[in-house]
Image 1: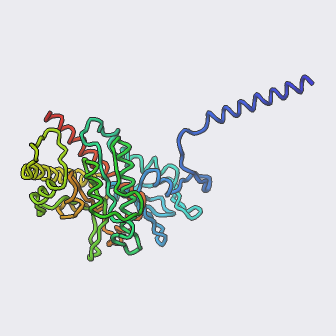
Image 2: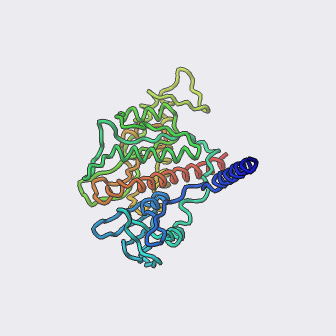
Image 3: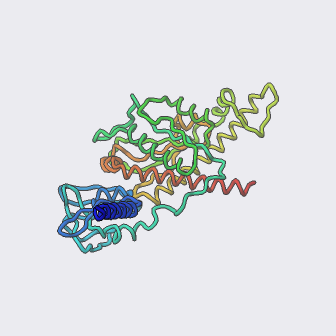
Length: 364
């Protein structure tokens, strides 16, 4: 009887040891799923690209894949050990395989190819924005609801692209402590007037509108940023603001009844300053996109878009690409590429805020 009790206690002891050991050895971070092919470890191309935020395209006919992130390109073929990295051939020890309908890469692919190429995705550490006067940003996802915007050949709707990128951008900026408001977070229609009113009522510091482009010339491609056109009269805008909008400036005091002309002068100064800041913000965004995305940047242009004209803060409208271009539409359909767009725009905005803050500190 006593031996039986000892046996039970001994068994319980070992069960406890096994249980605790299992708890200790649980991985603390997610690992990529691996496949065993001919006794070798492989990882899914899809999983690897997702974890590394790499845009990819696969041609089933030629069995070739194209990977891209920033200015870097990787070309590979199923069944081959040769990989082109930015046009330079590199040889893998084991061939790329097709496994259960998906492209599988040798387990060492990340260590050999990706890590040397992407040592740092973006500058290490977060941009310090705590002491910036720029706190609130309104992100405007263009179109929505009954207004689909432009539609690509494959049926990709601009309203869906805009909303997806806007949501990603909002999440990125919020993670850096910024107060972000979206004019729409679902597939609903909002008028242009309402979009501008949302920004003005919240007294936003920056307004960023996300759109997708279209043109009859199908070969046109690239990303461009717009600010309020110089052809739009600041004097007329100033008079309209003076009549309909509150200044809410602590350092300005108007004698009652307030002078409409004096208010118009102040608004004219504000509008002129906002236009200049919009151009600077646009440059930062374009620069970040050029550094991080392998896409054509068409530059910064002036346009009389209502959301830019009706907003009382520095404002830009970003056309992320041409859905009328077959290749560009195909890229934009890729969720990893849209993530890269959002991250590049966020980096441009944060760089602008950081430099703006430094300039303000010097002035003070």
